[in-house]
Length: 389
Image 1 (spheres, rainbow, N blue to C red):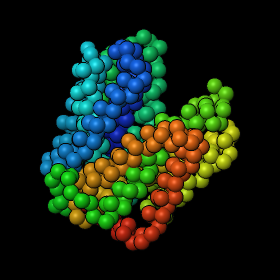
Image 2: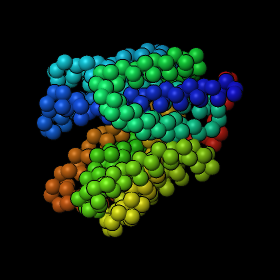
Image 3: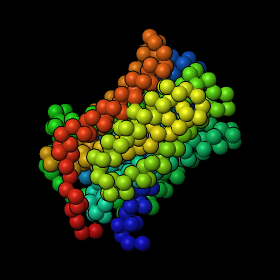
């Protein structure tokens, strides 16, 4: 295995570590609710503090990576991120848990920006698209973390004990991978805190990622409810739509890079928008188990490529450093993840869930139009710049 391949394995293992930590926290949310005797409304309010922290962390992450380099931020931030996880389980009260969740959200997005910056630099060195495969490893870690969480619950381990085990695994991954995490070369000078207006390219890419994240967030939170209340699936089949979506999204990310190499990023994004539109409309107009499952699978395949390919385009901005460009696009797209699920609920309250999902289908149409109209703004050199390994 050559040096670049070893670096790819190392960076991939770090994407996996971050996904594992997040999934481990998510798997124990019901236990956290029981520990503090939170109502559904109180839990919902508590869960908002993690995305608030994520949002606060975005401009700081872009500045930190530009100032210190992704290697330093990954190694320092990764250790702190791993050590913060057990603090969630050890929090003695909800008032202590709030700042811990805000900090955890900030660190999570710091790792997101720094890892994607590192991956883009490695992508340039390897001369081919590889970013989506790293996002696929993050999704795979989600399945793994959920499985480990189920096992820990079966063994009657407390969240603090569970998170402590994950922290040890995470620190081991960081220790093994650190020798292959490089200091990337700066390709542009645009730095500073991300409190400035993005250019036309980043705004367009950000809106595409916004619509993709809105679709993704809605599927995460509402797919089970849709199968229960609209599809009227049997209890044992309610989770089928979510599994189809998640499985397709995770596996699709491992094929995205090769498709982008062969057909260009723009073409893959266009097809992805069409898949989201078609999949959701299939579930809306044919709300039975087999067709809704197929529809959700198509949505998963469509969502799979949007964020990694958007990051890949943004990271080659000619005006801003990769970390700052990524932070800008992440900031725009993150609002889609925040606004999508509540919008589904409000529209469903006024009309019904089918109308809500039909509106989300328009996200796919928006992606298709944004990536088709004046697509010259997406032109990227057909060959990656070669660098010395």
